[in-house]
Length: 119
Image (cartoon, rainbow, N blue to C red):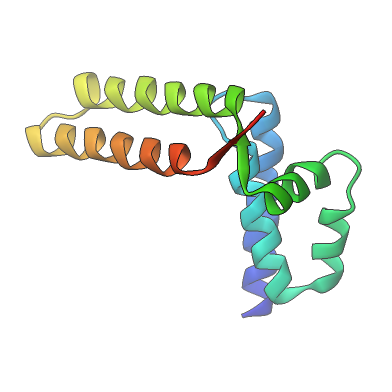
């Protein structure tokens, strides 16, 4: 199981790094997932990630403050709605799938907005 967690952590790390450059991929959730997976499987990788010069601050900031900066909240919620509304209107071929996309957007927005706002 440790090997699977390490591999999934590496995949999540790759997606998190890609999220730094691609606006539709969130960085912090993928880095947090990597940290959680590596905490359970490899303390060495976990400490490397937390102490990384560029990636560590994303994780430490969230773990310390349990808050999301206002700018990140606005961008995240906006991208969620743009993406999922597009899917609901132009991709979904049946009404229940479109409804599922809208419900998913609502749930993700609620989750993002439920965190404290850090200024």
